[in-house]
Every structure is written in structure tokens, then in C-alpha cells.
Image 1: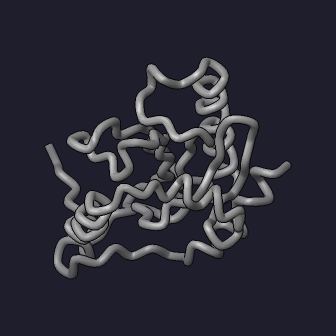
Image 2: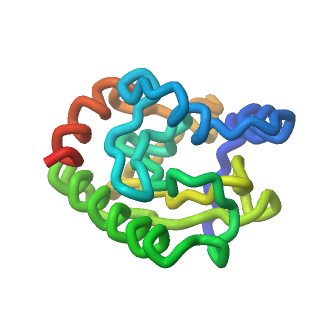
Length: 160
């Protein structure tokens, strides 16, 4: 079995555990979607770029309401969460033409949730050969574009 190590994320995970503030809720409250890389808002959920992406196009889909447990989601939130996840995948397919996707949730801190109080779905586009030697020898992840450029590609596809 191969393992993909991402040691540079340690700073993010460590810092996230020091704060009780939910950045999802903070971004929503600021109501500056462009600055906060919020790509789309729906009735019960929203889509935003991951500020610490594994790959270009890495987005997250989350409920508008601060909720950390799947069993606490209202039925409408649950349905929209996965409907919007499907919409995010379609937008990423159109914008990037990836070879595949990783789609998933980390529920609870021990499962890797950086914000365990506000559940969210990660959608990560993948390409054959999208990992290289840089993370292994240089502890550096090479991303081919800036978040603003990613947002510029995806926002129009999610507001159609």
C-alpha cells in the first residue's frame, strides 16, 4: 500500500485545534464571498475553495448551519449537501477535465477533521501523475494556479 504524506499540513491542523472559531461560519458572516472564496450559496449549503488545497480545484461543500454530526442534519440539508457535491463535481469536470475525484468527509478530529464542529464534504480533482517528487524531497506541494484563478474558473459554472 502506498501512503501519501503531507507534513506541511501539520501547521494547519495544529493551528486549527488551538481555535474554537469556525472559519466556515466566519466566512459566511463576513458576507464577502469573493474574498473568502465562497463560490456558490444554495438554500441550505454553500461551496467554497479549500485555502489549503491538495490539488487545484479542491472545493468543500458545507451546510450553512453550524452542525458537526451527520445525524443532526435536517433532511433538506443532507439532500442538498450531496446535490451540491454533485454540482461541484460537474463544474470541476467542465473546468478542469480531471481523470477522477476524491470525494469524502472527515468526521471528528481523530478522523482528520480540521473543523469538527462544522461538517463538510471535500471534492478533490485528480489527474494521473498529479503527485511528484517535490512533496517527498522538498516538503513542497506544487499547485499550478492561485486560488483566485481557480475561483474565476469555477464561480461562473456554479452560478448558472
